[in-house]
Image (cartoon, rainbow, N blue to C red; front, side, top):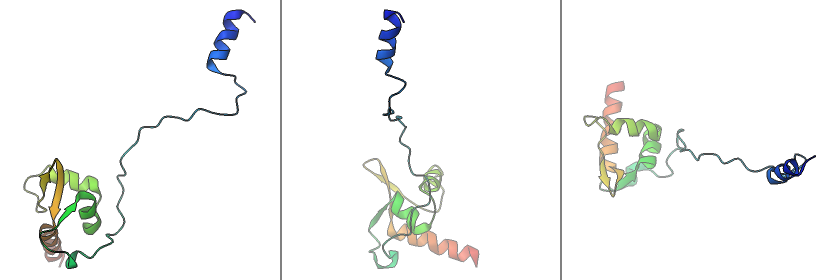
Amino acid sequence: MGKDERTRIEALGSPDRTETPRATKRRRKNRGMPPPAPFDIDTLPGSSNLTALEAAAVIRRTPGALEQWRRDPNHSLKWRYVDGRPLYRVDAVRDYLAKCDKTTT
């Protein structure tokens, strides 16, 4: 084995190494359904704000669904941006749920 080959093997590490390097994975958002909300929306004041994740938990939709709904300015679930983050008023979430109940019955 020549000097160049030995240097290359030492640089890459021995193939017999028991320790494997950790793969660097891209961190992804959790796009699944959030767990049910740990609070009762009926006990909250109407002027309270919910984050997108909290609103998704109450409505039982994915945060990605709410993200798509925000692209439609005429969607019945209303929101507003505060410091660049979408917030949902409790009153708006209650109104949305009431409209959904009326359309299904």
